[in-house]
Length: 90
Length: 383
Image (cartoon, rainbow over all chains, first blue to last red; front, side, top):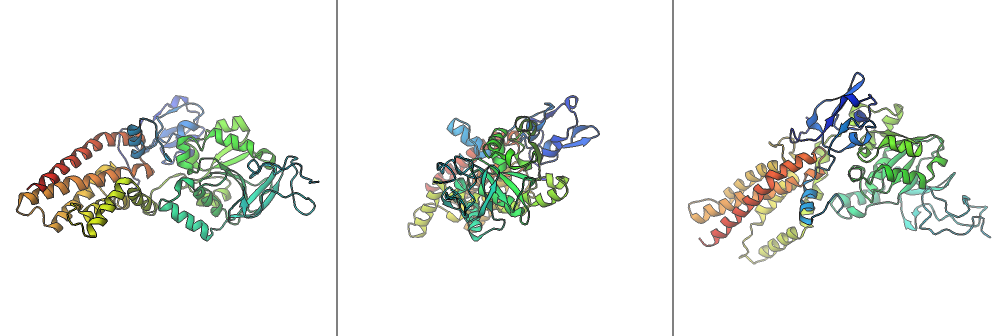
């Protein structure tokens, strides 16, 4: 059973007009959010997206937008408390 | 006179970089100089996983073992328990697996030793070049998210190791989880190397290579099965006790057990709440109701709180008993919820937007609950 997190929150957006069918988003997404449908990519289930940003980084045609980030409560809390960006390893 | 030219600063020599100023490869018997790299060591530090030294067009490259040694296993175990995690790194640069020639594949990984270990062990019996990026000792996925396992570092490392002179092809195989940090098309533009994203798991590399660099859909999916959730729990658990508050708790509990009975601390109740939030929620993750991790922690914590009350005979008939029961039910689940919420960063499927929303509701709830619980606890002393 695929583990699911909160629904209807992710910032993922996709513009099929800009898609050239290169398939990079399908190759890099670790949750199979994208799939090839004919000559273009399509979203399977937006709520599976964890906003890692791999698709954003690897779409040369800017068909994908997302606010990338790490879903880490600890990092968010520490950022609030220390007043600066915190990420893994800090 | 040395055939190799003036000695180079050993700091600057390293994997894939010439050991001497004249670019002459020191091969041994007919040369008076010594390579700065000996089998078994690197930069002067003893590294038992280096089995030898390969001579390549642009310098000497350390060859690495492909089987785990007991020092590897011990190192992995320590890191899994939370010790030395931030310093478990190896020097970045180029390494050799097996006996790679100019046409051998180039695999790329992070300089976190566990990432490096996974790749070389998966490649037992095969030959390849292993390009190790400087991710400051952090694993591929976390480093990619931060940008350290990134386009810039990859380009830098390709140039520093003179990879283009060592391999005749122009193809790199990257772990799929490096994609958040590496823009394949930009790497190609800057270096002429094509980036192929390989499988998520290093273990799938042989199958990926044998299929002609083709990944099955399963190889491209990250899963979070029980075994992988369980292996993360030791560091979650020890994390509590490596924090000053956790240490203080242990100290107080120890004092109470040693005779200072007046200390009003139910150590067992708290330990249970800690185990629930750092181990049990993680094990039962798919089956506990609720999408938010804090809610899962709260639910299991509430069950524990009720069980502890039953064990301790609360609420019983007195006001004091009711206040005690109230304090247990308000404090313990809040603690488990907090600890469970902190597991979001170690999981494989939580989005930042989701975590922000989860925290918006659960942090105030946890603070209010714990606060009221403390009030009930203190009130109980006066009854």
